[in-house]
Amino acid sequence: MTKNVENINEICKRYANALILSSQDRNELKIITENFEHFNKVLRISNDLSSYIKNPLINSQKKSSVLKKICKSFSYNQFFSGFIGVLTKHGKINLQEKILNEYKRIIDLKDGLTEIIVTTSEPLEKEVEKKLKTKLSDSLKLKIKLTKIIDKEIIGGIKIKIKSIMIDNSIKSKLTEFGI
Image (cartoon, rainbow, N blue to C red; front, top):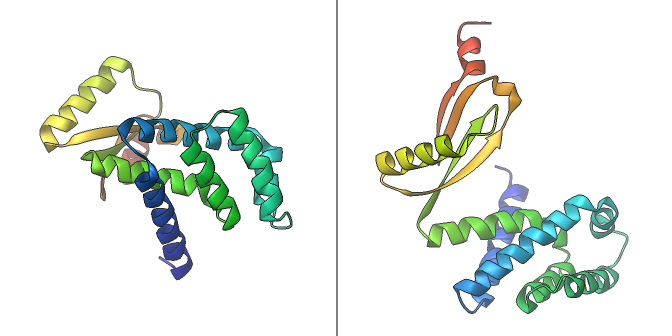
């Protein structure tokens, strides 16, 4: 990992921890998470707003003014709105998506959850997803959070990632094994 990536990861971790520490209780953390996810969705949907935020030629005061109005219009939690202001003031607003990911990761750790990433070519049926989650949780003796990814490239089968362990039982990997 390059030094720059390590620095960015550390910055994201610090901001995420600061946001968590600023909240009063579990309910407020939930509200902040919802606000943060909604904010990121707004930025993904609005190319104009996203470009505006990422534009280095626009000073932080102008960005802050626009974001303050956005936070107010969506009735975001006061700590979250203030947090967005701090990110903007310090020129870190373009890291908001990475900070959200780190924020959610830290909360999951505090809750004792282990993220398991399941990749399939098609969405899992609810019953299959439930059985898979139960089976993984029971066999690993962990509280798990299932993250589902759809990737048509794997053709069929399943890939399961648990921390640094990858179980690849996809058709694509089997075909590759046989040189096809």
